[in-house]
Length: 194
Image (cartoon, rainbow, N blue to C red; front, side):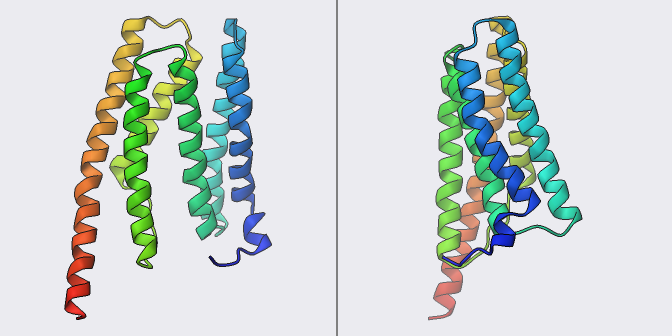
């Protein structure tokens, strides 16, 4: 693994990524100890601040030419850990969240394995496709609504969860041929070089 320069580690976008990682246990603690609406709102505010930081770290990185390979790793890591923490916390309140949690683990596990295969073959990660970005945005909006409105009707909650689950399943199914065609292409390249 290459040495990462201190300047890269301490760039403003990466510092914002570290901040988002620190916000995860703060959110979990606030949410799990919440007993009043005000407590749930505080937890939602922490996630709102985290999401604003997520939006600005990418904008700053692009505007000031601070995009780094480490940042390309840190930003999605913070996203996935944040979403996973929110899902686990919401599962304590809404049983159907388990469906989203399982799909989330399957989708992210698949992406992790395919990313590892690409890296092992010396290829750089291209980042998320448009449908992956849409799925992530929808997931965050739904999770944030569930945090912000703790007394939403169970029917509405379950419809939002099912909408997210459908989007996540479609995204996973769309990523499979992209990854398979990449692996297939690499196999042809390998055979051509023999």
